[in-house]
Length: 407
Image (cartoon, rainbow, N blue to C red; front, top):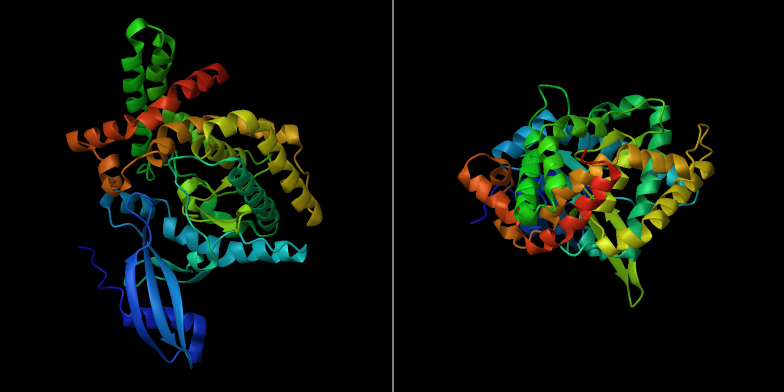
């Protein structure tokens, strides 16, 4: 049974006082439930609290409490990578500056849910307005995004990147916690490495397909890649100061997105969630991870150049309107960055895609998936044996081989 006892009237009064000040008379009543299903948010625990409060009149409000995860391995990853502090800076200091820039050019875009406050007691958490009250909702992560949803993400991502570049140039100290990626050469920051053991599962699948020897070349390359995947991962997060760098969301997959819809008009708007792993570096990091971890394969195959062009035109237009004084990258420059950081599409397919396509998220336990021992190994095998994942992996491996990403 879930333990919600730590979410009490005193905590809610403290949180709501930040928002309403002396207007808040009292918390009349509240109900607590999980905001997402287990497995939908692997790097946090999410609670929805429906509150009735007295501010001279009774008002109903819904809050989202985003709490650091309770799993031992997950907590270690969070602590070593300054996850909590990083997200506080993004929501509390960088995102307001992004909105100032956008409003200055008449752009009313909202990129993320409103963060009301943060607190360390009784647990480390961020408190948000519940975007569900504005009609936002998650989509089925297993299916991947169609073209209309993908275009929305690309546009918001380009605006986030453009504004972050201007803010960085004005105040680079704000980005101090985002300068190192989640996989690093730093021997004190190695807890993220278990995510990379997934290449063993891909090797296992390919060896099963290799009865007639057709997969021999790719299998040999995967066996070699196993010893190089950590350095290759570090290269993704190696920043070149002479290149165009931006604040990458760095965990841009379907469950970190909320969409809203018009009446009979399809998808209308998007919010991006979770900046726990944000990284200042090449825009190719976000673009590769998004295109290969969240799109329907047929959409990526048919519309890849179109989506890159849309990203670039939005980036260029936003920078020009904001009178950016630096050199704006050309469309070929963006393609170069995507190729240069192209190994991140392998990371997306080997790490994120199996989780995105997982059927029974209620069985998910990230500590178990990242752990050692036979039970953890059995869980990983089940994750990768998902027919939905197995059906798309062969074509992706052949693509990566032709592009040189398995060499």
